Length: 131
Image (cartoon, rainbow, N blue to C red; front, top):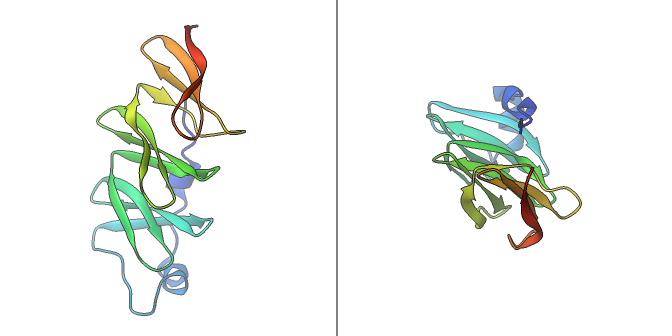
């Protein structure tokens, strides 16, 4: 499954970042902040991905991360995929071999050669089948 990388190419300018974040706030050195969507921006700090809000609070601990979809963001850690909510809580810990962002309340996930769908709580709602 190919992931959408458009969000990883939309680095925002220093001026735009200044207008988004509290006065005097600067992201840590060696960080890039990407386009904000729904009040959160992707951040890459020294090779780790995460999110930053408009108050300048955030985290960057994942090997990769994608924009939020239906209140959840797809993240990758140690080769496994999971989902975090807008507060940064891991709703679905990185466990799956591949995953797609949520759409219509479900996310497509893969374990080994089997695919299934999980709901926003991480519960399997369409059983895994080999494709």
